[in-house]
Image (cartoon, rainbow, N blue to C red):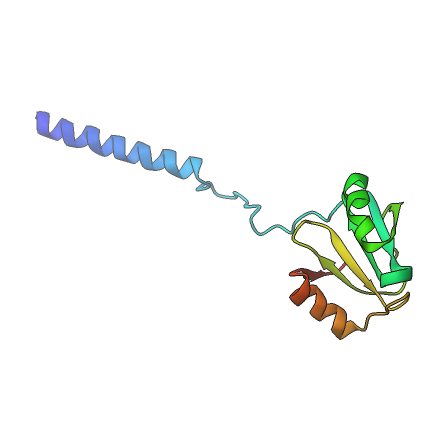
Length: 129
């Protein structure tokens, strides 16, 4: 009799454990996963406008980041995002900033060049702004 009770108890414990695992690890019906959800778009606080000289403009999440990165582009820090007019490609950088290439300014960009520079030289990903 003790053997039957021992088997029943251990079976009950295993069953309860499997139910607990299913409940804690997304085994519930109707559970949703955020893994496939699109990332939220970057909230742009400031930009570094270097269109006049280099035909690029960088978008940043903070004005501090824009101010620290802008001197290397010889651009002007501005509130808000880079302009859409004249943009050829937007390129998301590894640091989260977005480098925008323009067909206007001191060094106009062609589409193929901007796409290649984004991917190969900058290690970035072309995005739709």
